View 1 (cartoon, one colour):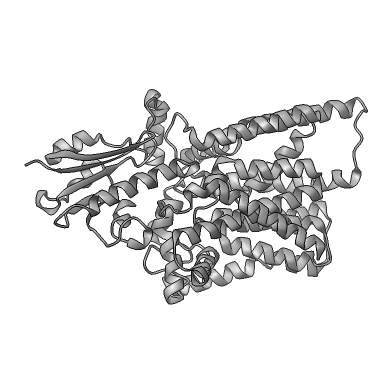
View 2 (tube, helix red, strand yellow):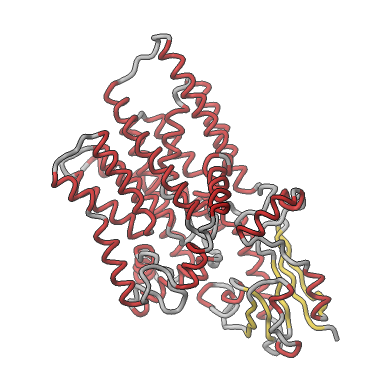
Length: 508
Protein backbone atom coordinates (compact mmCIF):
# COMPACT_ATOMS: atom_id res chain seq x y z
CA UNK A 1 0.00 0.00 0.00
CA UNK A 2 2.83 2.39 0.82
CA UNK A 3 4.47 1.69 -2.54
CA UNK A 4 1.18 2.33 -4.35
CA UNK A 5 0.74 5.63 -2.50
CA UNK A 6 4.27 6.67 -3.46
CA UNK A 7 3.69 5.97 -7.14
CA UNK A 8 0.31 7.69 -7.03
CA UNK A 9 1.94 10.75 -5.49
CA UNK A 10 4.58 10.64 -8.25
CA UNK A 11 1.85 10.47 -10.90
CA UNK A 12 0.13 13.51 -9.41
CA UNK A 13 3.44 15.39 -9.33
CA UNK A 14 4.21 14.60 -12.97
CA UNK A 15 0.67 15.54 -13.99
CA UNK A 16 0.92 18.91 -12.23
CA UNK A 17 4.31 19.53 -13.84
CA UNK A 18 2.95 18.79 -17.31
CA UNK A 19 -0.13 20.88 -16.54
CA UNK A 20 2.07 23.86 -15.70
CA UNK A 21 4.15 23.49 -18.86
CA UNK A 22 1.03 23.11 -21.03
CA UNK A 23 -1.00 25.83 -19.32
CA UNK A 24 -1.05 28.18 -22.36
CA UNK A 25 -2.31 25.30 -24.54
CA UNK A 26 -5.09 23.85 -22.42
CA UNK A 27 -7.97 25.95 -23.79
CA UNK A 28 -7.01 25.67 -27.45
CA UNK A 29 -9.67 24.38 -29.88
CA UNK A 30 -9.05 21.09 -31.62
CA UNK A 31 -6.32 20.64 -34.21
CA UNK A 32 -6.43 18.87 -37.60
CA UNK A 33 -6.99 15.10 -37.02
CA UNK A 34 -8.51 15.81 -33.61
CA UNK A 35 -11.14 17.92 -35.32
CA UNK A 36 -11.50 15.61 -38.29
CA UNK A 37 -11.86 12.25 -36.56
CA UNK A 38 -11.07 11.69 -32.89
CA UNK A 39 -13.33 14.30 -31.28
CA UNK A 40 -16.36 13.51 -33.52
CA UNK A 41 -15.80 9.78 -32.84
CA UNK A 42 -15.77 10.37 -29.08
CA UNK A 43 -18.89 12.54 -29.32
CA UNK A 44 -20.68 9.81 -31.27
CA UNK A 45 -20.00 7.43 -28.38
CA UNK A 46 -20.98 10.05 -25.79
CA UNK A 47 -24.32 10.89 -27.42
CA UNK A 48 -25.29 7.62 -29.09
CA UNK A 49 -23.05 4.88 -27.70
CA UNK A 50 -21.54 4.29 -31.17
CA UNK A 51 -18.19 2.50 -31.15
CA UNK A 52 -17.99 2.95 -34.94
CA UNK A 53 -18.58 6.66 -35.58
CA UNK A 54 -21.12 7.92 -38.09
CA UNK A 55 -20.45 11.67 -38.03
CA UNK A 56 -16.96 11.24 -39.51
CA UNK A 57 -15.03 8.80 -41.68
CA UNK A 58 -14.69 5.28 -40.32
CA UNK A 59 -11.01 4.38 -40.11
CA UNK A 60 -11.10 1.08 -38.24
CA UNK A 61 -9.18 2.41 -35.26
CA UNK A 62 -9.86 0.54 -32.03
CA UNK A 63 -12.15 2.53 -29.71
CA UNK A 64 -10.48 2.84 -26.29
CA UNK A 65 -9.39 6.50 -26.53
CA UNK A 66 -12.76 7.84 -27.79
CA UNK A 67 -14.50 5.85 -25.03
CA UNK A 68 -12.05 7.28 -22.46
CA UNK A 69 -12.66 10.86 -23.63
CA UNK A 70 -16.42 10.38 -23.68
CA UNK A 71 -16.25 9.10 -20.09
CA UNK A 72 -14.25 12.16 -19.04
CA UNK A 73 -16.82 14.44 -20.69
CA UNK A 74 -19.67 12.57 -19.03
CA UNK A 75 -18.10 13.22 -15.61
CA UNK A 76 -16.64 16.73 -16.05
CA UNK A 77 -18.55 18.17 -19.01
CA UNK A 78 -17.58 18.67 -22.63
CA UNK A 79 -14.81 21.25 -23.15
CA UNK A 80 -11.34 21.36 -24.72
CA UNK A 81 -9.91 21.88 -21.22
CA UNK A 82 -11.35 18.53 -20.08
CA UNK A 83 -9.98 16.81 -23.19
CA UNK A 84 -6.51 18.30 -22.69
CA UNK A 85 -6.49 17.38 -19.00
CA UNK A 86 -7.59 13.80 -19.77
CA UNK A 87 -4.79 13.37 -22.30
CA UNK A 88 -2.24 14.98 -19.96
CA UNK A 89 -3.17 12.40 -17.35
CA UNK A 90 -2.27 9.64 -19.81
CA UNK A 91 0.99 11.44 -20.66
CA UNK A 92 1.84 11.72 -16.94
CA UNK A 93 1.08 8.02 -16.48
CA UNK A 94 3.44 7.20 -19.38
CA UNK A 95 6.28 9.22 -17.82
CA UNK A 96 5.64 7.59 -14.44
CA UNK A 97 5.51 4.09 -15.96
CA UNK A 98 8.81 4.71 -17.75
CA UNK A 99 10.38 5.87 -14.48
CA UNK A 100 9.19 2.68 -12.76
CA UNK A 101 10.57 0.50 -15.57
CA UNK A 102 13.91 2.33 -15.52
CA UNK A 103 14.20 1.93 -11.73
CA UNK A 104 13.62 -1.81 -12.16
CA UNK A 105 16.22 -2.39 -14.87
CA UNK A 106 18.77 0.31 -13.96
CA UNK A 107 18.93 2.91 -11.16
CA UNK A 108 17.30 6.12 -9.99
CA UNK A 109 19.52 8.43 -12.05
CA UNK A 110 18.79 6.61 -15.31
CA UNK A 111 15.13 6.62 -14.31
CA UNK A 112 15.15 10.37 -13.65
CA UNK A 113 16.79 11.28 -16.96
CA UNK A 114 14.68 8.82 -18.96
CA UNK A 115 11.45 10.25 -17.55
CA UNK A 116 12.61 13.85 -17.95
CA UNK A 117 13.82 13.45 -21.53
CA UNK A 118 10.64 11.66 -22.52
CA UNK A 119 8.51 14.46 -21.06
CA UNK A 120 10.62 17.12 -22.84
CA UNK A 121 11.04 15.41 -26.22
CA UNK A 122 9.27 17.62 -28.78
CA UNK A 123 6.92 15.03 -30.30
CA UNK A 124 5.88 13.65 -26.89
CA UNK A 125 5.46 17.14 -25.44
CA UNK A 126 3.36 18.33 -28.37
CA UNK A 127 1.21 15.20 -28.33
CA UNK A 128 0.75 15.16 -24.54
CA UNK A 129 -2.44 17.21 -24.65
CA UNK A 130 -3.70 16.26 -28.13
CA UNK A 131 -6.51 13.73 -28.55
CA UNK A 132 -4.64 11.21 -30.67
CA UNK A 133 -4.22 7.46 -30.13
CA UNK A 134 -0.47 6.89 -30.21
CA UNK A 135 0.47 8.23 -26.78
CA UNK A 136 -2.10 5.98 -25.08
CA UNK A 137 -0.71 2.97 -26.95
CA UNK A 138 2.72 4.02 -25.68
CA UNK A 139 1.49 4.05 -22.07
CA UNK A 140 0.12 0.52 -22.18
CA UNK A 141 3.06 -0.82 -24.23
CA UNK A 142 5.44 0.51 -21.55
CA UNK A 143 3.33 -1.01 -18.78
CA UNK A 144 3.20 -4.35 -20.61
CA UNK A 145 7.01 -4.45 -20.85
CA UNK A 146 7.31 -3.49 -17.17
CA UNK A 147 4.98 -6.32 -16.17
CA UNK A 148 6.84 -8.76 -18.41
CA UNK A 149 10.26 -7.96 -16.95
CA UNK A 150 9.16 -8.00 -13.31
CA UNK A 151 8.20 -11.71 -13.55
CA UNK A 152 5.76 -11.60 -10.65
CA UNK A 153 3.14 -14.31 -10.10
CA UNK A 154 0.49 -12.09 -11.66
CA UNK A 155 2.68 -11.22 -14.66
CA UNK A 156 0.67 -13.36 -17.09
CA UNK A 157 -2.78 -11.84 -16.46
CA UNK A 158 -1.34 -8.34 -16.05
CA UNK A 159 0.53 -8.61 -19.33
CA UNK A 160 -2.64 -9.81 -21.04
CA UNK A 161 -4.51 -6.81 -19.61
CA UNK A 162 -1.93 -4.11 -20.42
CA UNK A 163 -1.14 -5.46 -23.90
CA UNK A 164 -4.88 -5.75 -24.65
CA UNK A 165 -5.34 -2.11 -23.61
CA UNK A 166 -2.43 -1.15 -25.90
CA UNK A 167 -4.11 -2.94 -28.83
CA UNK A 168 -7.48 -1.38 -27.99
CA UNK A 169 -5.80 2.06 -27.92
CA UNK A 170 -4.42 1.59 -31.43
CA UNK A 171 -4.55 -1.60 -33.43
CA UNK A 172 -0.96 -1.30 -34.68
CA UNK A 173 0.26 -1.91 -31.11
CA UNK A 174 -0.35 -5.60 -31.83
CA UNK A 175 3.21 -5.71 -33.21
CA UNK A 176 4.33 -5.92 -29.57
CA UNK A 177 3.14 -9.53 -29.49
CA UNK A 178 5.58 -11.19 -31.94
CA UNK A 179 8.46 -9.40 -30.20
CA UNK A 180 7.25 -10.64 -26.82
CA UNK A 181 6.77 -14.16 -28.17
CA UNK A 182 10.34 -14.18 -29.51
CA UNK A 183 11.56 -12.87 -26.16
CA UNK A 184 9.65 -15.56 -24.23
CA UNK A 185 10.91 -18.35 -26.49
CA UNK A 186 14.56 -17.37 -26.98
CA UNK A 187 15.40 -15.35 -23.86
CA UNK A 188 13.15 -16.84 -21.21
CA UNK A 189 12.99 -20.36 -22.69
CA UNK A 190 9.30 -20.32 -21.79
CA UNK A 191 7.50 -23.58 -22.50
CA UNK A 192 4.49 -23.52 -20.15
CA UNK A 193 1.18 -23.61 -22.02
CA UNK A 194 -0.61 -21.34 -19.52
CA UNK A 195 2.00 -18.62 -19.97
CA UNK A 196 1.58 -18.77 -23.74
CA UNK A 197 -2.19 -18.43 -23.35
CA UNK A 198 -1.65 -15.13 -21.52
CA UNK A 199 0.94 -13.98 -24.07
CA UNK A 200 -1.48 -14.62 -26.94
CA UNK A 201 -4.59 -13.32 -25.18
CA UNK A 202 -4.42 -9.72 -26.59
CA UNK A 203 -5.24 -11.13 -30.02
CA UNK A 204 -8.77 -11.88 -28.81
CA UNK A 205 -9.98 -8.28 -28.25
CA UNK A 206 -8.42 -7.27 -31.56
CA UNK A 207 -10.19 -10.13 -33.35
CA UNK A 208 -13.46 -9.28 -31.61
CA UNK A 209 -13.11 -5.64 -32.69
CA UNK A 210 -12.38 -6.63 -36.30
CA UNK A 211 -15.47 -8.86 -36.43
CA UNK A 212 -17.66 -6.15 -34.89
CA UNK A 213 -16.25 -3.47 -37.18
CA UNK A 214 -16.85 -5.66 -40.24
CA UNK A 215 -20.41 -6.27 -39.09
CA UNK A 216 -21.08 -2.52 -38.81
CA UNK A 217 -19.06 -1.12 -41.72
CA UNK A 218 -18.53 -3.98 -44.16
CA UNK A 219 -14.74 -3.57 -43.92
CA UNK A 220 -12.24 -5.42 -41.72
CA UNK A 221 -10.40 -2.16 -41.20
CA UNK A 222 -10.78 1.39 -42.45
CA UNK A 223 -12.83 2.13 -45.58
CA UNK A 224 -12.15 2.16 -49.29
CA UNK A 225 -10.54 5.61 -49.32
CA UNK A 226 -8.58 4.87 -46.14
CA UNK A 227 -7.21 1.59 -47.54
CA UNK A 228 -6.28 3.21 -50.87
CA UNK A 229 -4.26 5.91 -49.10
CA UNK A 230 -2.70 3.89 -46.27
CA UNK A 231 -2.11 0.55 -47.98
CA UNK A 232 -2.34 0.38 -51.77
CA UNK A 233 -0.83 3.83 -52.39
CA UNK A 234 2.12 2.93 -50.12
CA UNK A 235 2.95 -0.44 -51.70
CA UNK A 236 5.56 0.66 -54.21
CA UNK A 237 9.17 -0.61 -53.81
CA UNK A 238 10.75 2.82 -54.32
CA UNK A 239 8.28 4.47 -51.95
CA UNK A 240 8.91 1.80 -49.31
CA UNK A 241 12.67 2.43 -49.54
CA UNK A 242 12.21 6.20 -49.32
CA UNK A 243 9.76 5.77 -46.44
CA UNK A 244 12.32 3.62 -44.64
CA UNK A 245 14.94 6.35 -44.98
CA UNK A 246 12.49 8.96 -43.71
CA UNK A 247 11.44 6.74 -40.80
CA UNK A 248 15.07 6.13 -39.84
CA UNK A 249 15.65 9.88 -39.88
CA UNK A 250 12.57 10.53 -37.74
CA UNK A 251 13.50 7.87 -35.23
CA UNK A 252 17.22 8.38 -34.81
CA UNK A 253 17.96 11.96 -35.93
CA UNK A 254 14.95 14.29 -36.06
CA UNK A 255 13.80 16.40 -33.15
CA UNK A 256 17.35 16.49 -31.69
CA UNK A 257 17.32 12.69 -31.22
CA UNK A 258 20.73 12.58 -32.92
CA UNK A 259 22.55 13.81 -29.83
CA UNK A 260 20.89 11.22 -27.60
CA UNK A 261 21.74 8.47 -30.11
CA UNK A 262 25.33 9.75 -30.33
CA UNK A 263 25.58 9.65 -26.52
CA UNK A 264 24.24 6.09 -26.48
CA UNK A 265 26.79 5.04 -29.12
CA UNK A 266 29.59 6.61 -27.04
CA UNK A 267 28.30 4.70 -24.03
CA UNK A 268 28.50 1.41 -25.92
CA UNK A 269 32.04 2.22 -27.05
CA UNK A 270 33.08 3.16 -23.51
CA UNK A 271 31.58 0.00 -22.02
CA UNK A 272 33.35 -2.17 -24.63
CA UNK A 273 36.64 -0.42 -23.90
CA UNK A 274 36.31 -0.87 -20.15
CA UNK A 275 35.23 -4.51 -20.50
CA UNK A 276 38.25 -5.32 -22.68
CA UNK A 277 40.56 -3.84 -20.06
CA UNK A 278 38.96 -5.90 -17.28
CA UNK A 279 37.96 -2.75 -15.34
CA UNK A 280 34.18 -3.27 -15.66
CA UNK A 281 32.24 -4.73 -12.71
CA UNK A 282 28.48 -5.05 -13.04
CA UNK A 283 25.54 -6.45 -11.13
CA UNK A 284 24.70 -9.65 -13.01
CA UNK A 285 20.99 -9.47 -12.13
CA UNK A 286 20.70 -5.90 -13.47
CA UNK A 287 22.79 -6.80 -16.49
CA UNK A 288 20.42 -9.67 -17.34
CA UNK A 289 17.40 -7.35 -17.03
CA UNK A 290 19.08 -4.79 -19.28
CA UNK A 291 19.77 -7.45 -21.89
CA UNK A 292 16.12 -8.48 -21.70
CA UNK A 293 15.04 -4.87 -22.16
CA UNK A 294 17.46 -4.38 -25.05
CA UNK A 295 16.08 -7.46 -26.82
CA UNK A 296 12.53 -6.10 -26.57
CA UNK A 297 13.34 -2.49 -27.46
CA UNK A 298 15.53 -3.34 -30.45
CA UNK A 299 12.98 -5.83 -31.75
CA UNK A 300 10.02 -3.50 -31.23
CA UNK A 301 11.83 -0.50 -32.75
CA UNK A 302 12.83 -2.52 -35.81
CA UNK A 303 9.35 -3.87 -36.40
CA UNK A 304 7.76 -0.41 -36.00
CA UNK A 305 10.23 1.16 -38.42
CA UNK A 306 9.64 -1.57 -41.00
CA UNK A 307 5.86 -1.63 -40.56
CA UNK A 308 5.53 2.16 -40.87
CA UNK A 309 7.75 2.10 -43.96
CA UNK A 310 5.46 -0.37 -45.71
CA UNK A 311 2.01 0.92 -44.73
CA UNK A 312 0.63 4.37 -43.98
CA UNK A 313 0.12 7.28 -46.31
CA UNK A 314 1.11 9.97 -43.80
CA UNK A 315 4.73 9.96 -42.55
CA UNK A 316 3.99 11.22 -39.04
CA UNK A 317 6.46 11.02 -36.12
CA UNK A 318 3.70 10.44 -33.59
CA UNK A 319 3.21 6.94 -34.97
CA UNK A 320 6.43 6.02 -33.12
CA UNK A 321 5.05 7.04 -29.72
CA UNK A 322 4.12 3.44 -28.74
CA UNK A 323 7.83 2.51 -28.75
CA UNK A 324 9.40 5.92 -28.12
CA UNK A 325 9.42 5.74 -24.27
CA UNK A 326 11.28 2.42 -24.41
CA UNK A 327 13.72 3.82 -26.98
CA UNK A 328 14.44 6.79 -24.70
CA UNK A 329 15.11 4.44 -21.77
CA UNK A 330 17.50 2.23 -23.73
CA UNK A 331 19.39 5.26 -25.09
CA UNK A 332 19.73 6.85 -21.63
CA UNK A 333 20.78 3.52 -20.11
CA UNK A 334 23.57 3.24 -22.69
CA UNK A 335 24.49 6.92 -22.31
CA UNK A 336 25.09 6.41 -18.58
CA UNK A 337 27.78 3.84 -19.35
CA UNK A 338 29.93 6.94 -19.78
CA UNK A 339 31.59 8.62 -16.77
CA UNK A 340 28.86 10.24 -14.69
CA UNK A 341 29.91 13.84 -15.27
CA UNK A 342 30.08 13.42 -19.05
CA UNK A 343 26.79 11.48 -19.15
CA UNK A 344 25.00 14.14 -17.10
CA UNK A 345 26.39 16.90 -19.31
CA UNK A 346 25.20 15.17 -22.47
CA UNK A 347 21.79 14.42 -20.95
CA UNK A 348 21.45 18.09 -20.02
CA UNK A 349 22.42 19.11 -23.57
CA UNK A 350 19.79 16.73 -24.98
CA UNK A 351 17.17 18.23 -22.64
CA UNK A 352 18.09 21.75 -23.80
CA UNK A 353 17.95 20.63 -27.44
CA UNK A 354 14.55 19.04 -26.92
CA UNK A 355 13.16 22.25 -25.42
CA UNK A 356 14.63 24.28 -28.29
CA UNK A 357 12.87 21.96 -30.76
CA UNK A 358 9.51 22.88 -29.22
CA UNK A 359 9.89 26.24 -31.01
CA UNK A 360 12.54 25.83 -33.74
CA UNK A 361 11.24 24.39 -37.00
CA UNK A 362 13.44 22.38 -39.41
CA UNK A 363 14.53 23.72 -42.84
CA UNK A 364 12.12 21.40 -44.69
CA UNK A 365 8.34 20.84 -44.69
CA UNK A 366 7.08 18.98 -41.63
CA UNK A 367 3.73 18.37 -39.86
CA UNK A 368 2.92 21.18 -37.43
CA UNK A 369 2.02 18.61 -34.77
CA UNK A 370 5.68 17.56 -34.34
CA UNK A 371 6.21 20.56 -32.05
CA UNK A 372 4.37 23.65 -30.81
CA UNK A 373 3.85 24.90 -34.36
CA UNK A 374 0.41 23.26 -34.07
CA UNK A 375 -0.53 25.85 -31.43
CA UNK A 376 0.36 28.68 -33.82
CA UNK A 377 -1.88 27.05 -36.44
CA UNK A 378 -4.80 26.82 -34.02
CA UNK A 379 -4.43 30.39 -32.74
CA UNK A 380 -4.30 31.79 -36.26
CA UNK A 381 -7.46 29.92 -37.18
CA UNK A 382 -9.14 31.19 -34.00
CA UNK A 383 -8.39 34.76 -35.05
CA UNK A 384 -9.67 34.17 -38.56
CA UNK A 385 -12.85 32.49 -37.30
CA UNK A 386 -13.59 35.44 -35.00
CA UNK A 387 -13.12 37.83 -37.90
CA UNK A 388 -15.45 35.82 -40.15
CA UNK A 389 -18.11 35.61 -37.46
CA UNK A 390 -18.15 39.39 -37.29
CA UNK A 391 -18.87 39.80 -41.02
CA UNK A 392 -22.41 40.92 -41.92
CA UNK A 393 -24.67 39.06 -44.31
CA UNK A 394 -23.52 35.48 -43.62
CA UNK A 395 -20.96 35.37 -46.45
CA UNK A 396 -20.24 32.11 -48.27
CA UNK A 397 -16.65 31.06 -47.57
CA UNK A 398 -14.52 28.87 -49.83
CA UNK A 399 -11.84 26.91 -47.96
CA UNK A 400 -10.31 23.44 -47.53
CA UNK A 401 -10.40 20.88 -44.73
CA UNK A 402 -9.81 21.04 -41.77
CA UNK A 403 -10.89 24.69 -41.82
CA UNK A 404 -14.17 23.73 -43.48
CA UNK A 405 -14.96 21.69 -40.35
CA UNK A 406 -13.68 24.40 -37.99
CA UNK A 407 -16.16 26.90 -39.45
CA UNK A 408 -19.18 24.58 -39.56
CA UNK A 409 -18.84 22.53 -36.34
CA UNK A 410 -19.13 24.79 -33.27
CA UNK A 411 -18.18 21.94 -30.90
CA UNK A 412 -14.62 22.18 -32.23
CA UNK A 413 -14.24 25.51 -30.45
CA UNK A 414 -13.70 27.99 -33.30
CA UNK A 415 -17.18 29.44 -33.93
CA UNK A 416 -20.36 29.87 -31.89
CA UNK A 417 -22.67 28.95 -34.79
CA UNK A 418 -22.04 27.30 -38.15
CA UNK A 419 -20.84 29.57 -40.94
CA UNK A 420 -21.67 29.07 -44.64
CA UNK A 421 -18.81 27.13 -46.22
CA UNK A 422 -18.12 25.94 -49.77
CA UNK A 423 -15.48 23.18 -49.31
CA UNK A 424 -12.70 22.48 -51.82
CA UNK A 425 -10.11 19.64 -51.74
CA UNK A 426 -7.12 21.96 -51.46
CA UNK A 427 -5.58 25.19 -52.72
CA UNK A 428 -4.22 24.16 -56.10
CA UNK A 429 -5.72 25.96 -59.13
CA UNK A 430 -7.45 22.76 -60.30
CA UNK A 431 -9.24 22.46 -56.93
CA UNK A 432 -11.35 25.50 -57.87
CA UNK A 433 -12.59 24.24 -61.24
CA UNK A 434 -15.97 23.29 -59.82
CA UNK A 435 -16.34 26.57 -57.88
CA UNK A 436 -18.36 29.09 -59.84
CA UNK A 437 -17.80 32.84 -59.51
CA UNK A 438 -21.25 33.29 -58.02
CA UNK A 439 -21.01 30.46 -55.48
CA UNK A 440 -18.92 32.25 -52.83
CA UNK A 441 -18.20 35.63 -51.28
CA UNK A 442 -14.90 35.10 -49.41
CA UNK A 443 -11.83 32.92 -49.97
CA UNK A 444 -10.07 31.62 -46.84
CA UNK A 445 -6.47 30.55 -47.59
CA UNK A 446 -3.98 29.33 -45.01
CA UNK A 447 -0.56 27.67 -44.79
CA UNK A 448 -1.32 23.95 -44.85
CA UNK A 449 2.25 22.84 -44.20
CA UNK A 450 5.47 24.38 -42.95
CA UNK A 451 7.18 25.99 -45.93
CA UNK A 452 10.47 27.52 -44.68
CA UNK A 453 12.10 30.46 -46.42
CA UNK A 454 15.01 28.21 -47.38
CA UNK A 455 13.17 24.99 -48.29
CA UNK A 456 15.62 22.13 -48.87
CA UNK A 457 13.14 20.41 -51.18
CA UNK A 458 12.99 23.45 -53.47
CA UNK A 459 16.78 23.82 -53.43
CA UNK A 460 17.31 20.17 -54.40
CA UNK A 461 14.99 19.44 -57.39
CA UNK A 462 15.74 15.69 -57.31
CA UNK A 463 14.35 15.43 -53.75
CA UNK A 464 11.31 17.44 -54.73
CA UNK A 465 10.61 15.13 -57.67
CA UNK A 466 10.81 12.09 -55.39
CA UNK A 467 8.49 13.70 -52.88
CA UNK A 468 6.04 14.68 -55.61
CA UNK A 469 5.97 11.25 -57.26
CA UNK A 470 5.92 8.99 -54.20
CA UNK A 471 4.47 11.11 -51.39
CA UNK A 472 1.99 13.33 -53.25
CA UNK A 473 3.95 16.43 -52.25
CA UNK A 474 3.18 19.70 -54.01
CA UNK A 475 4.21 23.18 -52.90
CA UNK A 476 1.19 25.24 -51.98
CA UNK A 477 0.03 27.43 -54.85
CA UNK A 478 0.82 31.12 -54.52
CA UNK A 479 -2.18 32.79 -52.97
CA UNK A 480 -1.77 35.94 -55.06
CA UNK A 481 -1.97 33.79 -58.21
CA UNK A 482 -5.17 32.17 -56.94
CA UNK A 483 -6.59 35.58 -56.08
CA UNK A 484 -5.78 36.87 -59.57
CA UNK A 485 -7.33 33.74 -61.14
CA UNK A 486 -10.57 34.25 -59.19
CA UNK A 487 -10.62 38.07 -59.35
CA UNK A 488 -10.19 38.70 -55.59
CA UNK A 489 -8.59 41.26 -53.31
CA UNK A 490 -6.99 40.75 -49.90
CA UNK A 491 -9.18 42.05 -47.05
CA UNK A 492 -7.55 40.55 -43.93
CA UNK A 493 -4.31 38.79 -43.05
CA UNK A 494 -3.07 37.02 -39.91
CA UNK A 495 0.51 35.82 -39.41
CA UNK A 496 2.36 33.94 -36.69
CA UNK A 497 5.91 32.55 -36.96
CA UNK A 498 5.75 32.20 -40.77
CA UNK A 499 2.31 30.61 -40.70
CA UNK A 500 -0.49 32.69 -42.15
CA UNK A 501 -4.19 33.03 -42.89
CA UNK A 502 -5.43 35.35 -45.65
CA UNK A 503 -9.04 36.28 -46.37
CA UNK A 504 -9.93 37.45 -49.88
CA UNK A 505 -13.13 39.06 -51.19
CA UNK A 506 -14.37 39.81 -54.69
CA UNK A 507 -13.19 43.04 -56.26
CA UNK A 508 -15.81 45.74 -56.33
